[in-house]
Image (cartoon, rainbow, N blue to C red):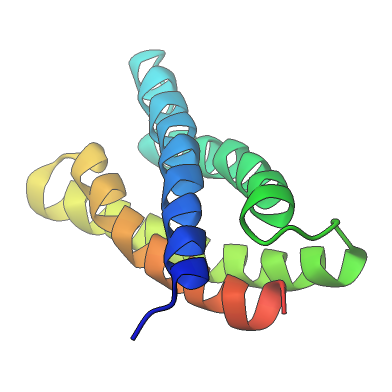
Length: 124
């Protein structure tokens, strides 16, 4: 059974993730409309989202001050999530000629991976 604290924490994690996803996808779409290549646009969106994400989750979701150690672990997870994101975008471009579909596909994968690794490794 999930206790109330973990359920609340997951809800806050999801809310923070939605905020960051909006920043991420919004910037990607803006850059694509401005003529940037889909990989560069996805990368810029991902970078903006990750900075807001770390600050939000360290302070709000997990109530911890930022540290060099947690940021280093966070960046390892970011690297993994970046590869997942770019792979999904590339797959959607190849199959559907639609980078946004790939970005949207990557979001739940990145969210689940990010929560589990944040809870049990980054902010332990």
